[in-house]
Length: 312
Image (cartoon, rainbow, N blue to C red):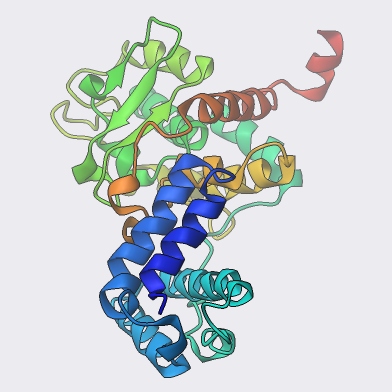
């Protein structure tokens, strides 16, 4: 008899050296959390397709549809490892993919195409949608900051000065506390040179704890400040603030020199159930810093008008 857990650990150990450390830890964490409790001590030959499906349905019941699909793949891979060694005769997970619940369609936030990005960047830089000079500056800088850091609206709105570290050193970061993050865990954003320079200029008009304060220094800008800024620039229905993240993600993925793990980590997208204790807010910090610096260079390079770029 060979138990599923014994086979799974052997399979994992056989391939772990070829995987990134964090990814290998996530795979084992999924198995330990969801598969081993119900199937771990069972003989591989005694596990039926119905047994595997019951385990997967329990994962689906908590809404972790991505995890359920990955687990089916992991179970199948364990069996493909076990069969040639005589531990099992068939793969009970092989035909289950079509029985799993499909992922809901993602509703993408409106964003312009790549060809329109230069015009958008120049519109933000020249923002004049408010008669009050301070409000104009706050809206413009909050929009650019959000675009350059891949942050969500509320992460930018509630950013406080105490969250920024090393602004005068070689490795500045923005440490966003867990309670403000969608996934309820700390997120570290490596800062580009341009963002650090922007923060220095923002200090001129920032009068309280918030980097982007509203009319009252003790309060952040409102929930609608940035989206209304997009409307005033003529982008209603064409570009949302959340859509900035889509622009950045598309650029990074199309560049083909940035790993998907880096991009997902920069977007703070990783599934909380998926990473569990293996999550590390500083993961991939060095390559993410290079990526966000390249994004800042790309974006802010568009502010220079074509004819000015030729003269330079």
